[in-house]
Image 1 (tube, rainbow, N blue to C red):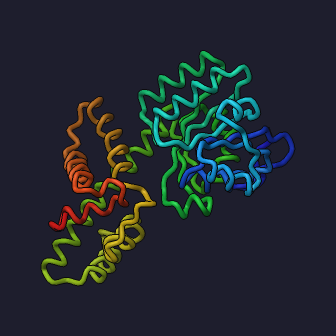
Image 2: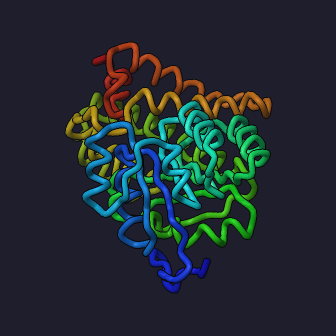
Image 3: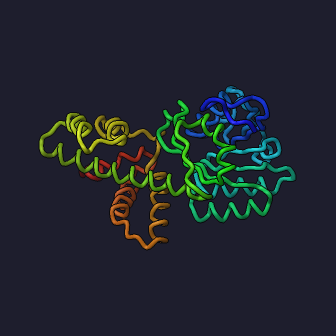
Length: 303
């Protein structure tokens, strides 16, 4: 395969058939950019017919199941809820008589199970790459995701033109599983930051400070962060936590992955455990499906 002449655009010559499985909130947008920018035929599958129809309208070629994608595509991208779904799809790909050469898991998945799965796929003649994504839904729409990739040097170089169709920052994290480690730690820091911002907002309001002015001021000083300017300001100030965003349940799942890594390394991770307790209490209060910054309702006593 020829490398792309420009980031986000691949040379049409010698481009393999690509596959995409998992067309949810993030995956649908990532797949749309892959179809539009890669110059490749992209075969697609999702069990939700409405999601599949959207991808077809954008130029994707439909398959009736995951194995069908594997039969047609040389490189298959996955955007799924977690490792259990990734393993199930990979089982279907392995069981098919015709298989892809490469599977790229863009989900946020358990590190140890990702590495075990890579070994199992290797025995079946497939290469697994982990390439989880970070940043918000709009970044998936715009093709400006951060993608951390666990792969060998040659495989990373081969995949980078396609990943650049979906992301603006493509990081080679090292070997298999390292992409997941970077994504998991990124999310851990994000959740801890949101916990801190919720506490700051609750304290400031209780002391008589306007919340919006407080966040504006914090953004001008050493407390500034992407989480403050984009996520916290857009949700905690208007008190708006939609259910069709990244829910508390997902935050708990991702933070549990970080705590598993901490346990394996013998690291206490006390701040992360306190945030996990807060997220779990947020879920127990009935906000499991709400956008996770809703945790402020537990911090300021409304939960």
